[in-house]
Image (cartoon, rainbow, N blue to C red; front, side, top):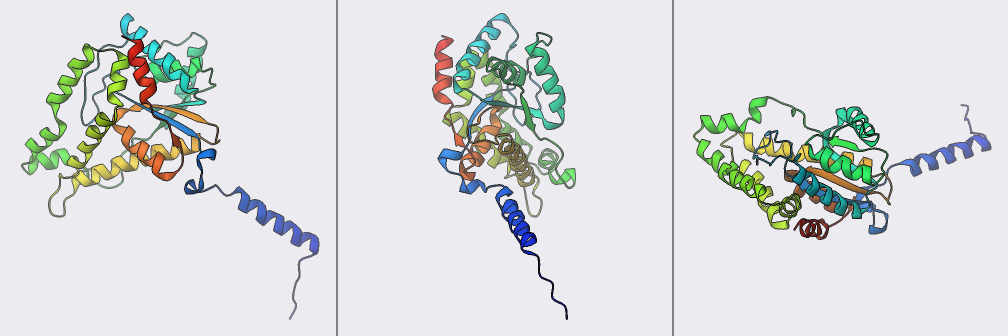
Length: 288
């Protein structure tokens, strides 16, 4: 029987390759320490453009008026103090090329900001910070499986839970919120939407949606599970985006996402999560 031995040079090359492969493996999030974590600032907003696609929708006043534009500029100036190295917004990842093109056109004076918060806050702050780009991190596609497995609305109507669903949605409260926005500044909006109490109240609603089930039919829990899955995909993109410990990532997103994204960011050990309230309270005072 013949036994083959690697030559010394070959053995050394194999050893070096193994060491390099081990070193190249990505670090575990749980092994990060405070000193080598990127910093994350999450800012939740109502949807400025009034798409009315959420489970609960508040009508936002026109943000392109002269007064609102001045208020948004004040908010952007205050948030710039975070010193972001990257700005991430609620835009589908497959629209990154379009987002980048619009941003670069804006930098040269060839793009007019739309009413989207990704434009009004995201692009405005990124430009003021002289950042080379702005990043789309959203994922919002159909979950795997049959649509009826997630369709809590149809299930509720067919099973006598329509009134419960309306209570969960609390349309009257959304209407009242819209009226309050009319009378307050954009700085007030953001300070209110990001307050710990407001975020907690908003997040609790998802557990009520999870109660829309009976027997072996779980449309509510399935939908909420997909909501968490969506936010995990967003979080995964954020981790990939913040690829250096010194990164400071500002996230402009629908307020409903903020409690879950913050939970993932903190519990994973991936980020040092900044408290938005000192800056938002400052933005509120500037507008008074």
